[in-house]
Length: 103
Image (tube, rainbow, N blue to C red; front, side, top):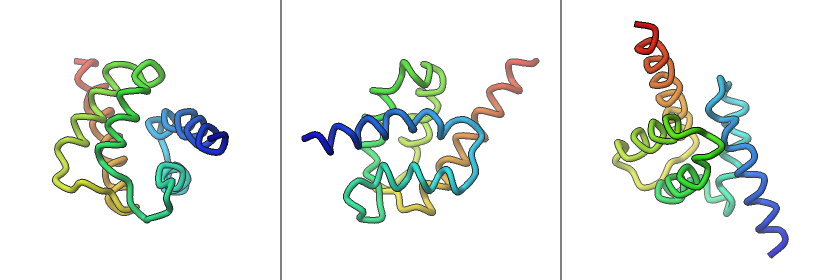
């Protein structure tokens, strides 16, 4: 139980870092933490639960963007390539949202 608690703590602590400008190395580190069973994929529903439980850390708007992008994807699991693409899509939506606020 202690190991599970430490993993959950690490994931929750690092999860918000994904939504700051990141490179693929950082994305890979977080992917590895989220892929707790080392299967090479992350369950979409688990990611949605994690985002929803991290709303206070992420902020409501950011969490909503992430969940919106997650729900748009057809697959139930993300391998590293799909997760990286997802993260870049979230980053792009954040940039678009900031640009809309400027006008």
